[in-house]
Image (tube, rainbow, N blue to C red; front, side, top):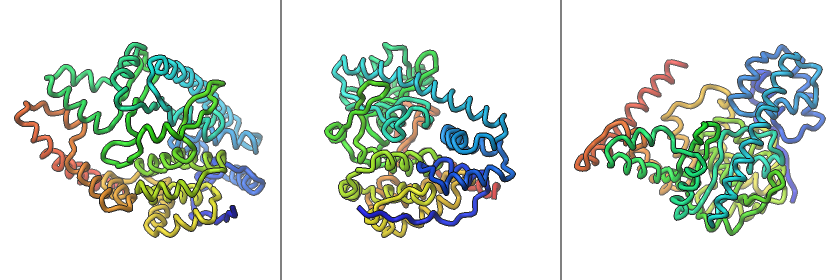
Length: 408
């Protein structure tokens, strides 16, 4: 299929940011390598560069590129620091991967079908190595009916729920039930091992109920691909399902980290046989066309990812997606958007009116875990939480708006 390469939008970034973007590109061709060398020779603020790489969780990329292209041009203290961070991350990734294998083996022994995603499995699926991606926990998707047994098995292996649940359990029984209702709303339980070295997120949905993503476990399981993670076959989303999920996940978090854009660029580089016809059709059916477009446009404009011509034309046909991508690109390395800006972006990121309305309904009227926990109420007054939610939300939006004004 013929592909075209459109140059990224001409945005004037400071040298450190431009260097970071070039170092996180998949294709370190001659022009890219030459540009990296030229930037390194400038008066680089290395502390700022290391800070930005750490914030966006792309330090391994930065080290690999600089160490490969021009290690002698770097201050040796900086090269040593980058090397230490690179190998420390690699060692921790191996540590988490070993734990993932243990959990999956335990689940399999108890007839629990599980699909790990993000973490080690994404590192292998998209990057072909555990060394380049940073992650802090393990994400595992199971069927909702298997959640009780999976929970017991994790507890048997020394895992506990976060302290928030422990605090709620000390309160009246009603509060515990309310926490479970809120967790069901998120469709995820967060576990921490007793030594606090490993966190596991047990999912029975890929997003919370406020961010409609109607993909069933059985559908994902029917399309799984097995990948070798440290010489063990592990189930993974198909490359098409993974691409859609990564675009949804990045959109949910307003694309605040460069790492999430790198995921898409690396996935498309590794899996060049993506069934684009299926991806485009599935995104249309699920109402994910704009989020897919956002992820692909950001990868294309910021990291030079080459897309098939028909795909590029399809996503560029959505003017809102183009405008959002340009806005995100222009302010990507500035301060994160305020809370009200995030909600506005998330509403804009949905192309269907029904999905926008569902998001607004949950935003305005669904109490959060914190709201359930902070104010113990008897059964007769539970309705008060649903009155408290919009008031609390408006208060926080006003505060975040004022904070944003004070920083500009």
